Image 1 (cartoon, helix red, strand yellow):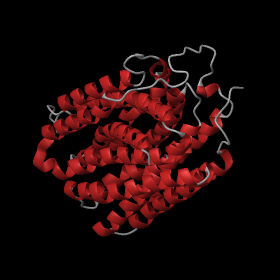
Image 2 (cartoon, helix red, strand yellow; image 1 turned 180 degrees about the horizontal axis):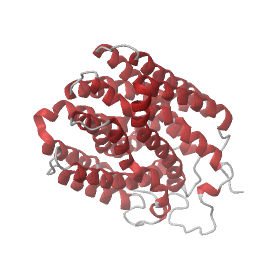
Image 3 (spheres, one colour; image 1 turned 90 degrees about the horizontal axis):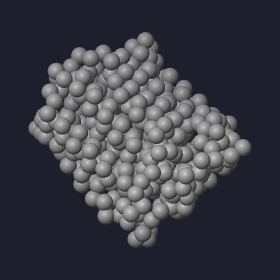
Image 4 (tube, one colour; image 1 turned 120 degrees about the vertical axis):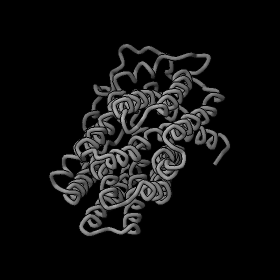
Length: 398
């Protein structure tokens, strides 16, 4: 690995980690806290709709893609201010009372998601611009790993130390970590990519390109089953007697190590194998981990068994995500990297958010086993969609 490649990976890793940090708290720690406070499975599932800015970010992505400062940098003009504002909002959240001010907390979650989703547009555009084709597999493995590290720190590790740190200190620590992660991009010298700052009024939106909709159909089903299962995993653990500390250690140690390994393996496969073949291998791994949820839910799982399932799920998910993100970079047009990638990423988020919102209802109606079985079935649908819908190249203008 060259020094230039290492610098790119370090820069992007810090930015994706700062996205995963608050998201990990809201998706992993908050559901456990809600369940312990007596909230229903339906309420926990519907709380996932607060991630809607991630689904809708394609609406304002073209503006982020084409507007910015030439002197400071097209991407930096968005990333640095958004990082600072996110840190300030998280610090403010530390002064809320979580047991009585859930409405205020939900507003904070929605705002932070909007800020992080906008930062993600600029960060994804920066990644596509600066990475060479042969660097994308490894970069996406580390990208997913960095994001998962942020999620583990914000979800698992915060749960471990929550009883010692308390609510306010936990949020102040997250704010400080995001400011620290801003340092590399603040000192990065951004070189404009070809097509940057151009206003191409006649260029088509990604949704108007030939082959775009079949591609989006593949993206929609790919992570649906995993989200359907993983959203109910935390309540499943809580209902089986695990404490906040138990869940924290399980997610913060086993989950992180397995997820990082899976992401790096998925990125390695995407760089070594043809993209379609790599995605098939990773989709099989993802489906197998969903099957393990079904098996473990049929009996009374012990902590060791649950830890093994969590590790398998994080590894399979990391593999699938890294391989998918690598393919998504290949499906972007030069000069439209931020907006093209964002449309694809938004489709994945719409899928996972829909699945997460429905998961509370399906778990209530079908039980945990039925919900996990449905998730496994969707994993098989995703595998079949690769054979039917995998594009041979990027969508083109008609």
